[in-house]
Amino acid sequence: MHGLAPRSTSDTPPASGSRNRQDILVFWIGNTRVAIPMSQVLSVAQEPSQVQEVPMQARGLLGVVHYLTQPVTLYDFARLLGFPSLRETRSEIIQTLFAREQDHIDWLNALEVSLRTDADFTKARDPAQCAFGKWYANFKPTDEELAEIMAEFDEPHRRIHGLADRLLEMKSDGAVDEALELLADERRTTLSRLRRLFEHARTRIQDSIRPVVVYLTTDGSEPLVALRVDDVHSVASFTPDQVRPVDRIGLPPELVDKTLFSGLITLSGGDTCLLMETAEILRNVELTAENPA
Image (cartoon, rainbow, N blue to C red):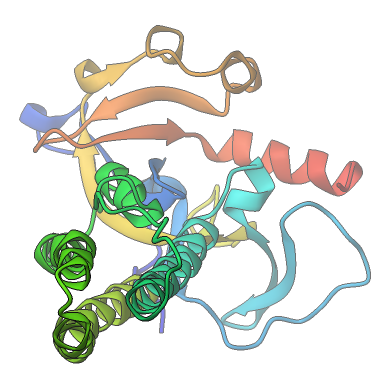
């Protein structure tokens, strides 16, 4: 089902107080918010389950889908522009969480070996120095629910790393059996809690991957191209005084030269997004078709 009804480019003029105000569709490409004028958006729909393959290759080209009865070429917008998609970056985070979970299983196994034998324990005792601790300190979730899950990691993660000094001291005092018993108990409790948090975080990240398809138009009725984007952020509006020129916001020169973005918009609430024009998007589609990667 199409989420937004087609919009004509000849809408009734707004009231005088909002004559210069324009509506935009704001969506995600990777971790960047990007906007397209709503007058150039025909419809927004869920990602179709069926995409027809085509006998050609081009950067970002996924195939052909149908808008009502009309075939439309579908591109992955992030790949078309050469950006990492949110799906890719979040999949990488999921794999990181699997690896960091295994690190802590291995950490406790190594500690047990050190308790049972004369092997030195060489893994990080400071929770801020293990691979997860370093990653955790720099990870900034944009999802409120994920942020709440990640905040719960702190206590069990610190508790796990605090076991090394505590249990190895018990061993040096001759209480190896007691140390091993405490280690087994921490595996059942603290490690299990930590592993549940890893699973909850991965599930939340996976559930947050919700690509949609945006059908673009120039006449308000005919779809010209379909773009798969990572997720819709909002439908918003802006006035010209909210736009900063791209040459004043520190964008990489290659983006300014391509004029992919006409400006940076600051929305109500402080969020920002980069404004694109349909003509430039279509030019990129044409260039990509002529020079496939």
